[in-house]
Image 1 (tube, rainbow, N blue to C red):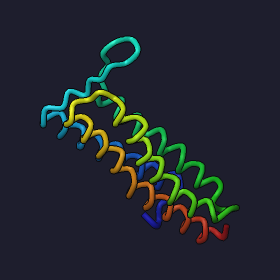
Image 2: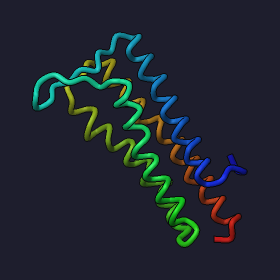
Image 3: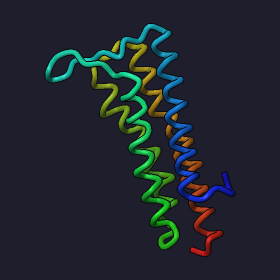
Length: 136
């Protein structure tokens, strides 16, 4: 990934995250997870599109911020390497655990959050290297 332009690097990282989390989700479905929880309006379900979106949007936004700021503020990369994983893990506690999912669904969705940790770290570090090479 070291030769990719920043936008392509972000695209690869986001694509890997979406595909990896959809695979985890499908395994959870195959293992019997229902992914149904109680929302304010009654029962709701986490589907594949939701998993893809919750993988894509936060990672895309975070990495775009890193790509834009790292050339002028190298500390942003170090911050992203810490903040990204903390947010991925923290959202397990805030979003996944409080919901009334069955245990397979809870475990699967927690794994989806954890999948983002190494992807976030690798992509942020690669963006930092890209910024240094570009002279920023």
